[in-house]
Image (tube, rainbow, N blue to C red; front, side, top):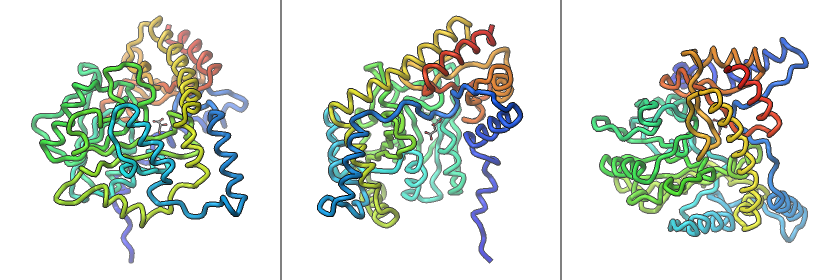
Length: 394
Ligand code: MLT
């Protein structure tokens, strides 16, 4: 008789965003015709930019032409896209080689798949509050997890612990859910810690395009020694609106070696075994993001979301609510009013003003008492949600 992966029994009953979707569905079923202002899951609302749309159309036409048709794509990514991404790094002064870039179907997929590179006995340290998939993917793999809690006293940017060792370190900066971002000096401490302990950092850079502050690194490879200890996972979901289109990339430097094994070469072996590559059409659309026109157009969408952030932050300022984030990240992390717990606040907002956010507890125990708003909604919904929130908080 087959034995299922018994670690599934250790997971929470349902994944955070699925649980929230069920709650909002139940609300709508009980209140037919109601409209919800959705500032919960970080899903984009702006359409793909014109340069991407044009490239997608052209790629579809290529697939209709026997001379330009593409079958299987290279497993690690189309050369034209690997080069475009590596050049994007090099233009920012970070020397990444084309073959160190792996094209993926998105950061969330990759964050789970990449665990194939590490022994199950390795320990994973997750800085919390954290994107819940980091923990869940390691629970499923049966790995020991060290929950490194953070709070307001450190601005949700903790230093490496002096007395705890972990093999895998998850760092997301700018952070989901808190919006806090490590500056170079702070992140250097984590890189040094990883090199000293011979650990590997999984650096989630999904929100780098939202950085405004020049002291905050866009890539971990801006730090000394990072190529010896870090894998960077990035996505076009939030940068360029690809949440539904699915495209991301992972950088594994050639220098990243443990016990004589090259994680880069292992990942080539993994990808050539487990995937047939990302669709040609989608990769062509992704390459358009890295053209001058594409970069200009995606910046317009990012500015749109930043204006949403400003509307929400102004509301929180006026109501005297403590919050962080919103400046270098598309998330705002606030303290629930009157000591309320985060799921009660969620229910109150849903029932009283039809605004949906994400309870902080869903990102780890130390997120209890906090709440996250996404700034990826439409302008109209964000404005109305802010108006309702201001009345509610007053
Ligand atoms: C979030 O809301 O935390 C993100 O949208 C989740 C994701 O990127 O998968």
